[in-house]
Length: 183
Image 1 (cartoon, rainbow, N blue to C red):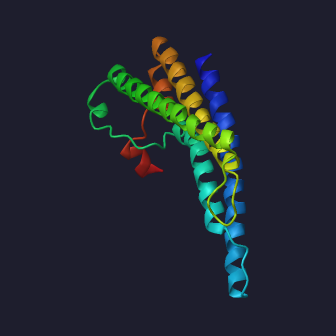
Image 2 (tube, rainbow, N blue to C red):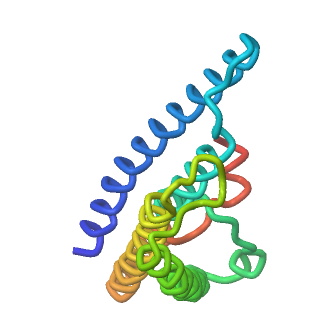
């Protein structure tokens, strides 16, 4: 059961990562078009604003993928000094703190979105972008990250309770320097 949840999260997040990659490629094409047009004496305008919005959205959505790929930075000097059970406790503590922090961020993002929706807020820029257009997907990305973090934590707890320390470590552990150097 726990492994199925982790596999489902990985599958869904790979789809999210592919979509994010496509969005970033479109953003790059937009910026390159702007650069070429400026050389020709004209401009689309708003590329800096739009690319900033894109970065905020894809970052919030990409965090879940990064979590499952063990790409988040962790300081693990103590973790290497203990056995598998000790490492699993460090990993669980780390995931619990991360899950709680991300949940708090998602909760604190909602009032920003709610205020923009209630006031029909627009950016104070020449594009006058409706802020909800940017903030809703940004907020949902943080919510998705929180969901992925909690489900990953729960699945890892179940794996540890079953004595599956290696599987748990593969889900929430770290990639050691020796593994990084080999790849």
